[in-house]
Image 1 (cartoon, rainbow, N blue to C red):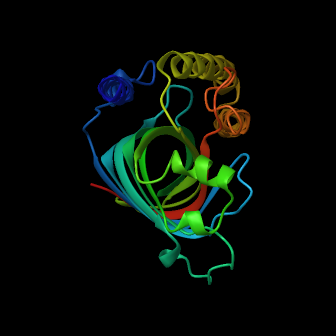
Image 2 (image 1 turned 135 degrees about the vertical axis):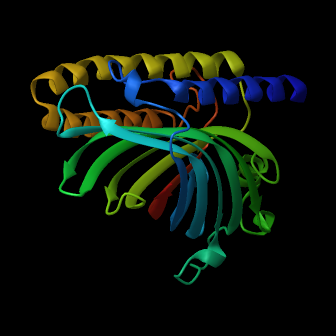
Length: 282
């Protein structure tokens, strides 16, 4: 079983990475995937939740680094509207020791490591020498969670629920929405909100079915937004950001109780974070 899960993870990891090579239709001459190396550093606050868990988790701070490639060019819709694409690998750690607030009594502390791959894309506007890009990001993540002494704080049902995630590597997905402010050609500032689901186990067919349904909805939004971009490019950039992030948020709400919604599956461990970042594009 572990071997099957490992093979499945490698296939998904590779397929997701390859999808980063997609291009903005009509601009293939402007797009080179490895054109600009990219480094991003993030810091923020992190929170865990689990449906059916009677306790609560400590708030934690999170630090994160992303490495990859980014490109930005004039879209085919207007010279004033930019197309942004970024593909990356990431590593992050969340811990209550990074939280600037004191620990709340009776809450469950944790340390969490995550790594994975993702892609970030959106349409933005150029403002003089700067640009503003609202974006949507989706990632695949593998999480190692260490719950400190959780058997001392919870009931037996809670212990059983947390044991599924404790001190093991678990696969999951995450979505992020934010705004990039490119203040210099090399330097950007970012504000973002991320939500992710950590699966207690991987069910191939149910996960694949849920992912296909989600991607089908995203393709419908892509086609709808493209029509707006053709008529009102700047408005389309904003609508693209709002609709796609609202859609992703809704999907993760549905997955709070069923990790592979709409299929009858267990509840995932949900992770939310607010982050601020600084990026360097070389």
